[in-house]
Length: 116
Image (cartoon, rainbow, N blue to C red):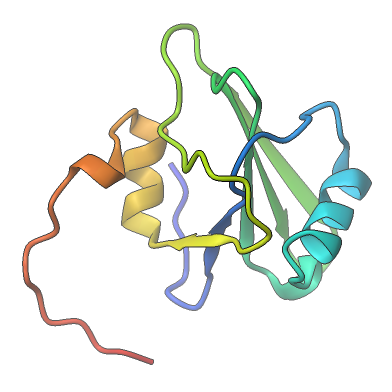
């Protein structure tokens, strides 16, 4: 599983993405469609049309990482609207998403959390 710093933000590209794109194609999507900096060190998530594949693009100061997951059954829960505004999520929610839990269907308990 991924261990992330609290400073790392996680963005989902809504809608479907052609996952045949490589690092350069995905970083261009981050720059052009999401209007974010792919070199920021944040994570950018992309899902295919069928919903059974996911790519995560990350920069670690010396190069890009692409993490790829293909489900054998089922689909990833994902926002269906295709907008240019990225959806931001928390790192515990990413762990739930990768585990197959629909974050939108869960209820977050009231909890103290320091806002940066």
